[in-house]
Image (tube, rainbow, N blue to C red; front, side, top):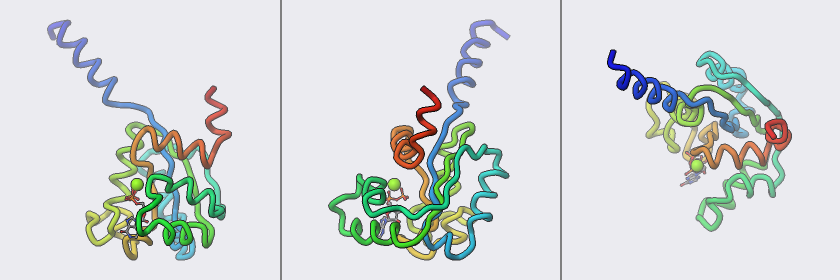
Amino acid sequence: MNPFIFVIASLTTITMTMIERTFLMIKPEGVERGLIGEIIGRFERRGFKILALNLTRLSREQAERQYEEHRGKEFFNDLVSYISSAPVVTFVIEGENAIAIAREMAGATDPRQARPGTIRADYGIDVQRNVIHASDSEESARREIALHFGDLMKEDE
Ligand code: IDP
Ligand code: MG
């Protein structure tokens, strides 16, 4: 192979396989319905490493901070009350392109529009009770990991 092409091809491969971390949360109805093992198992079987995991009940303030970007929308108050109403499972996974792949595995926000085989299509009840949260970008992942697992961020420094 032409050495120039080889270098370009290698660089492309390096930039396309990014080891990332992302934040996930099994929402109250997922925990309530006994879906913790099923959902976490999907990420394990897909080859992601579980870096942190917590069964916890979010305070109203934590829920508001989690969904900060939606403040002011008509569903905000309801969403915050719902998310802080009962235990959730928060966790962080690590692996290649974790952020985009976890979003794909979660599926569209509205379970009725989610592709078959995605977590929301398989288990979602409605647009609010859609079983799982997954960070939508590198910036959200960093912010949400810091919000729920501050200690994990400190280890990296
Ligand atoms: P996402 O979870 O797919 O990123 P977002 O639009 O960021 O979707 O909304 C955050 C969460 O807010 C959703 O997962 C869902 O639980 C809730 N939500 C979004 N849109 C609506 C709505 O129109 N009605 C009620 N709840 C909603
Ligand atoms: Mg979102």
